[in-house]
Length: 165
Image 1 (cartoon, helix red, strand yellow):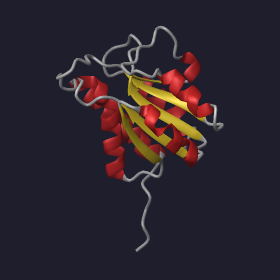
Image 2 (cartoon, helix red, strand yellow):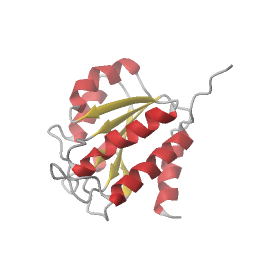
Image 3 (spheres, helix red, strand yellow):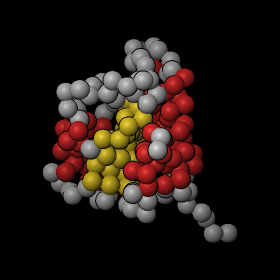
Image 4 (tube, one colour):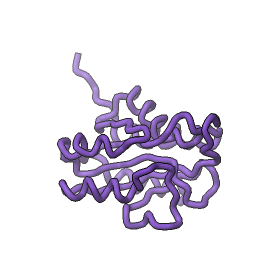
């Protein structure tokens, strides 16, 4: 089974659940903008999960997430886990350790712990391996393609809400 199939299999376990998807990243820093890009694509598709584009300050959205009382919290971010650029992987908070690098002030693991102090929620990090995250860089082709691939997987898992005519 390929990496994409394995990821989709893991994401499919969230199908039908009350899920909040949070995109984290800085769109001015190349591949670090992967999380917000995925959120933008999902917002256009009008999926049936709650979306939050937290930009560079996910801690500002902790109370909003808590008030939503989701079963699952899916955090999308550019995370350096020493893979090829554009590789997508899913992590539980306890898997985020010293080998994983985030560009944000508040560590992703601490963010998850702060939410979990208030509500019981299963937290998953979907990391896209960046190629570069320097200020002023544009997003790499690999990460742009990975963001599109991830967005499509999430559209499949959380299909758009159909309006009744």
